[in-house]
Image (cartoon, rainbow, N blue to C red; front, side, top):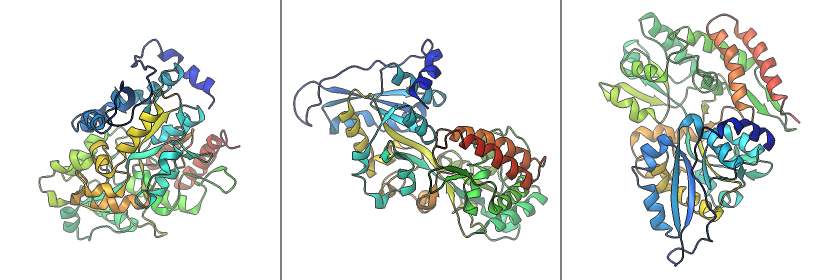
Length: 423
């Protein structure tokens, strides 16, 4: 995407959106020295600030560690994160540090909105990071983002009800389907989620596709993006998913809050479980021991893949204080600080030794995230792929078309989207 396209895309926003004004500051002084402070402007999701950054006094703690800087957070609602990033860039008011949704990074890279961060990445100890997560932000040999708030999925299940049904905890996708059918006959939903979410086909029920060892698309040795929906594994997965959905509530608009509440109430047997649900759903269980966790189930090819999502730190290409930006990102990536800042999971496995992640409820995530991956390579057309594939995916789940037909249609439609960026 060229910068001119980005300019056109934000032209209508300029009259309605407000943004904090940046300023050209003097060069930062060394820590503990004298001189005027320089401002470091950081754009974050409002929920991240309200839940973590604000309550944990991140602004004050950073300024105590780096007294030469004046840290300023700009809180933006989720639906406006991308718009605000583009608007600030195209009006010459770039943020120094930007909280970027992983799926938006390719658009910002192609539009020259974010700057390379190779020097910061070179200082990371990769033995503690998911290499897949870090390398996903690498474009044309340079890193443009660093994961700081990733997430992944594990499998949660109601151990009490599953035992009452006569089953052991599920270990494979076959186990999951057998439990789903047996539970549905007894009046329980197998899982719950709404087809209205464009990410349902890759992150929710669709996330189990990774247990078949395949992605919706991949990048081949020649750098081309190739859809994988025309494979036997994809068809086999779609048969499994269609049978699973037959045991789920057929409310296409079912929201996640309701689905999770049903799970806590014992109406749903299993759920793809995310880190945020530890705080929001687990307390709703009358008996905590009823909710148990496992890694994602093993698929037919012996894989228990898990879909990764989450956020990255990026630095604005027109940052007024690039040195201050690097200082903040490096400081925020310290293992003890990650737990104070991220809402999902820490990117550095050493952070699991610090609060709030040093409790048993996160142990399974610590194991699973090492095998997790983004469900598709990060490209500028990723959101379009989600929208395109989910329409056909939903038709298959509802039984309007067969898994074979869904894969044929999905392959043709997704490949057409990918061909718009293939060189």
